[in-house]
Amino acid sequence: QKDGFDWFMRKEIYEQPKAVADTLLGRYDTDGSLRLDELRIPEYELRLIDKIIIVACGTAFYSGLVAKYAIEHWTRIACEVELAHEFRYRDPILSGRTLVVCISQSGETADTLMAIRHASEQGARVLAICNTNGSTIPRESDAVIYTHAGPEIGVASTKGFTTQLTACYLLGLYLAQVRSTLFGDEIAVLMAELERMPQTIQRVLDEAEPVLELAADFADQPSVLFLGRHVGYPVALEGALKLKELAYIHAEGFAAGELKHGPIALIEDGLPVFVVVPPQGRDMLHDKVVSNIAEIRARGALTAVLAEEDDEAIPALADVWIRLPKVSTLLQPLAAIVPLQLFACELATRKGHDVDQPRNLAKSVTVE
Ligand code: M6R
Image 1 (tube, rainbow, N blue to C red):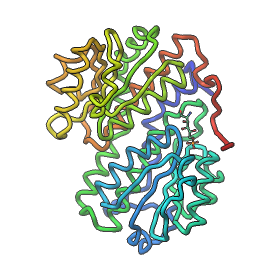
Image 2: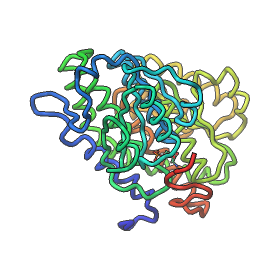
Image 3: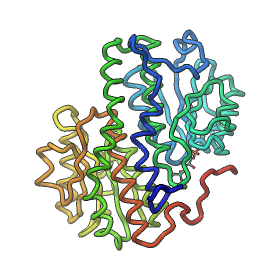
Image 4: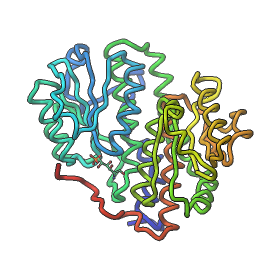
């Protein structure tokens, strides 16, 4: 049932506050300890892990890219992220102390399944982050963290992505707890912020009007770019993927620091560019991304800037300011992706496309 929405996808975008809340439910005890009961890997083994490799495809891969920043920062365990279809063909270095984390909404993606089979054969421990109970990937993994997004019908993943992020944050904090790389009160502060994220996402949804108007303005654009840095970079990639798959528009996500190494040549008069800006004052990359906005604007780009609601640098630089609530840098993707999902959904609707069933795509890719 679409519950009055025009598309399942739009309904699923609006379900994200609940989906994230459900994924967090029952994980954090009143005594201040994180519990991941389904995990099934004993704590002493988690203490021995010396490398994490995240494998996934598409949107799930982008959630893994965000996870790398959080996991390395909180646990100091080296974390690589790899497209599942590349992983087993390059003879990856694995051992009993490698934790392979596979992320899959459906739990049936063939590329991801083949990657974890390869990892298991090589003796690595495999942990699945999955939304589908009893699907093949969690069944073939040593451990699982289920996301509780509920069924995702729209081919374009939305609540799948935000609940994957949530599960990755939980995993990072749990590993930090087990390995004592964060103090209990540091985990408590981060968990409190994570538990506020459903309300934060709800605010973003309630204030989404500007991005919907923007979709009307940009409906005839042949190309849209997305820029971000640090965790904003995977958000840019995911924003571009949503637009490609739904609106069939050329869209590219770039790391903002890479601009001057090539992509800035693409900037021309009237080219729409979304930019994800890190929090002001609390993130050293803020000013660098702001300079990038000035550089592309000087070359004629139309800038749609996702930045905190009180960011003083933005009024002078943004053609459109998509205001984000204040959150810490590592958690910002949970809020920042939502306007980009809505933008793609709205733009595709205006172009008359089937948003739930985009051309050439299947919800679950069960062949390699
Ligand atoms: O079910 P999975 O999470 O394993 O699927 C992975 C990708 O196929 C999936 O995220 C795909 O990229 C979506 N169409 C993105 O919206």
